[in-house]
Length: 237
Image 1 (tube, rainbow, N blue to C red):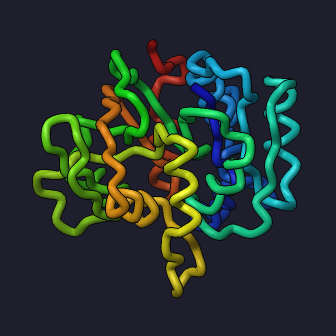
Image 2 (cartoon, rainbow, N blue to C red):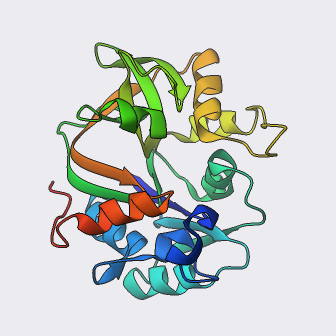
């Protein structure tokens, strides 16, 4: 499996809680930035001859310098414009050689990904997420261990598990992203809609179970909650 980190988020909603000009994935949590924590937790899963890939904003050097200092063989790919997570994943597609765990660079994980992992493609699902967490992220309706339906920030989270920003994808699924519709109001190719598009084209996703605590950093409240976690907490294999 190959690792792909999506680190182009600018964190505009964080305002003064994020240093100016610094991407969201470089916000410090304890002694390291968010992306550094994710690298430490997830790079042990990287088992591909292809390099880990970091998708960064076109004008950003912070993530590139940090990633190469920690992982000299990493590939840096620049996203020309902030046009959605699915578009960012497409930027990495030429370097993806097989199943890839695509990870948003603004996540905080305190727990474990349950073994054994399903075959790709699969979507990470947090069984412990409450209704508020589902509303802030995306909802996943499961039938057994198969994904039946997805809903972005659903107002009614009944019977939905919380979807996480980790996606175990194949090159074929990424190719379908190029055909997924673009949100005309935001001019972005959004990840949940791209996944739904792939499902309409016949792709069946399994559930990759996460157990523990999860925070997607979008607001000052999210950042405060993340900083309240034990700084020594780590993702346990």
